[in-house]
Structures are given as structure tokens and as C-alpha cells.
Amino acid sequence: MRLAAAGIVLALSACTTTEHKLPVTAEDLPPRFLAAPAGTGPIAEQWWTRFGDPRLDQLVNEAVLENTSVAQAVARVRIAQAQARIAGAGLLPQVSGGLTARRQRQPASGLGGLGQLPGLPDGAEAPDAFTITNYAATVDVNWELDLWGRISAQTAAARADFLASTENLRAVRQSIAAQAVRMYFTVVEARAQVELAERTVETVGEAARQINNRANVGIATPSDRLLANANLDQARSLLEQRREALATLTRQFEVLLRDYPAGSIATAETLPEVPPPPPTGIPSEILLRRPDIAAAERSLQAAGFRLTAGQRSFLPNLSLTGSAGLASSDLGDLLDGGSFIWSIAGALLQPIFQGGRLRAQVQALEGQREEAVEVYAETVLNALLEVETALAVEGYLAQRELALDSAASAAEGAVQIAFNRYREGIDPLLTVLESQQRALDSRSAYIAARRARLDNRINLHLALGGGFEDMPISGGG
Image (cartoon, rainbow, N blue to C red; front, side):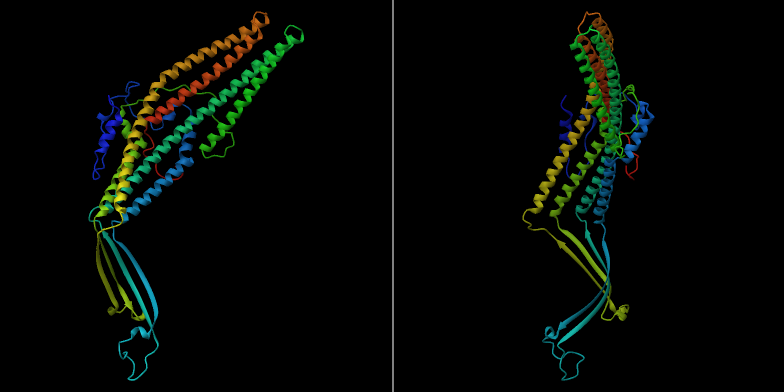
């Protein structure tokens, strides 16, 4: 089977500048996800509730409403919405009103050749200058007729940009929800690692105490005393390292929630069980559910409309202007019927030579549309990759978690056996220290593997898309 992107790119490349629909059909994609059987059913909007943690539900809702990235995306939507209204205004006549008062002094020499000026007595000498006063109240209209659809194409491009921004907002909300869930489990894991390190310090400390007692009565060697104390100090160092990681992660989580990084956020004590996988549906449904794909589609449409507008800029522009109002040299006579004035004009402007600017603009717009085609194809492929990967690694992660749990249990059981054999003089102290370290590493790896499975489940939910369609564009999210 050929790569799905090939069919997508070929189909998109066949689009003309006057057709902005995406001819991507189910035939471009396989009938099912190859990594797992197709499951049917609706995609849960609040999928994080499946983990069964009310505290998690509360924090995710807080993150989606308060996160700064969401607030920025909301602002971008509002900007795009305003720009779409600005572009649409070009289709309508532009009307303005004005009230002017002008007083002008003009030298009499500028009126030369007119002979005797009216209003002067015969033989009277003309003044050196004249002062002219004029008052006017007008309403002016300017309208560029969209004969070829250039302004309509620009308006459609701005509208597509606005719709793309709304899809990007939905994608940001989905991403922040996933980040909040992922960070929550990361903090829970860090607390579990701290608890494990504390238990290890207690276990290692008890062993070191007994070995020191044995060394005091001459049963254990001085080197055993040093090794036991060194092992205890190493366990204490690891505990402080785990506490440092917990302090850093909790503050990062609080900033994600737009809270002050006080390091005091409360979470569950242990990681939850991994819930059953959600229904995946079929690959073609991803094209409809994923907001990033929808945003790429809208951006591609906008690029097509801009190319159309650029091509039509070679055609003549027809504009109409008109003005009507009142004008008088005396403010008191402004409302007299005889002071009414009006004018109307039309202009047809055909570009002839602009140094290749218009052609270069069209070439740039063609390049932008070609880029938008590739961005759309890349977005679709990445979406399919994320779903297939999450489905494919699920089994591996589950087997890894099971194996690490078994290894940790065996290593923890071996610690006491090794210490008993050491006290009986059968095994050296190094065997005890090695069993303790192996037990710690295996249990720590098991906790990390559990969180890795939870992360993969989060990735699958995020890859499938869906959710936040009806959330309003308001406030901080």
C-alpha cells in the first residue's frame, strides 16, 4: 500500500484556485489502524475522568480555563475575528461625513488680468490682497466595486484564517489538558519515588546499624563498616535528589495552572490503574476530529483564496466616489437651499507596469499555497503516526511493567536472604549491597513504567482528538 500522504498530496495539488474544498476521502487512508483492531464508539470529551481521580479532574479544568497559552490562543482568535471583519468591510461603500471651515488670504496679483473688480467704485484702487472664507458640510461616499471577486477572495481568506484560529484554540486546549494530566502523574510518580527512597534509607540504615554493631564486637570487618555507612550515605543522597525533583515538578505544575509556584499542590499518593483503551474508530475519522488537521485545512483554503485575489489584481479596478452637502462663505447662509453642492465620479484603473511587483506577489502566493499543501499532508501523517505509535507500544509497555514488578518483588525478597547469609558468614557484604541496589532500581523502574503506560494512554487520547468543540471563546480560556 502506498503511503497515505502520496494520495493526499496528489489530490491537493489538483485543486484549482477557484476550488477550495479538500478532496481527501477514505480511499486515501487504510480502512483501519494497523497496530490494533478498530474499536467503535464516541470519543469522550473529558477523557481524563476515566482515571477516576476527582482531584485530577479539578486541576485539568482549572488548567484549561486559566493557562496562559490558552489565554494567548483566545487573544489570537479575537485578532483573527477582527481582521476578518476588516476584510469584509471592503465589500461595502465607505461613508464619511465632514464639517470644514476655511479662511484663505490670496494676493490680488493672483487675480491679474480680470480688469475692474466687481464691487469697487469706478477709478478706485484694488486692494493688495483678498480674504476668502468658506464653510462646508458634506457626506462623502467611496466604493470599490468588486467586479472580479478580488475583495471577496480576500474576505474569504480572512474568514478561513479566523476559522483556523478557532481550531488552533481547540488544539491548545486539548494540549493543555493532556499536559496537565501528564504533569499530574509525573508529580505523583515523583512522590512515590521519594517514598521509595525514604523506605530504602530506613532499610539500609537498619542494615548499617547491625553491621556497625557487629564491627564493634569484632564479628564484622572494618571494611564492612565503611561499605555499610557509604551505602547509607548514598541512599540519603538519592533521597535528597528525589526530593529536589519533586520540588521542581510541583512548581512547574503550579505554573501550568497559572498559580504561584509555591510547591504545595496536593495530588494522589499513588498512580492509578491504567484504564481500558478508548475506541479508536477508523483513520479517516481523524481528519474530522483532529483540530490541528482542521486548522491546516482552513489555512490551506486561506492560501488558495489569497492566490485567487493575487491573480485578479491584474484586472482593472472600478471605484465610485460621490459627495453631497452644503457650502457657503457665510456660516449663517449654510442651510439655505442655494448652498447645496454635489459631485459624483468614477475611475477605472488598469495596472500596466509596476516593475514585476504583481507577478512576484502571485509567485509568492503560489509558494505559500504549495507550502500549505505540504503542511496539511505533514499534519495528517503526524496524526496517524501518533495514533499508530500509541497503539503499537501499549502491549510492550504493559509487558515491561509486569516484568519490572516481578523483578522488583524478587529483588526485595533477595535482600533479606542475602543479609541472613552474610550474618552466617556464607556470602560477603557486597552481595547484600548489590541486592539492596537491585531492589531499589527495579522498584523505581516499575513506578516509572507505570507512569509511562499512563503517558501513552494520554498520548492516545490526545492523538484521537475530539473535545472542546462547544467551549466558548471567552475569559482566560
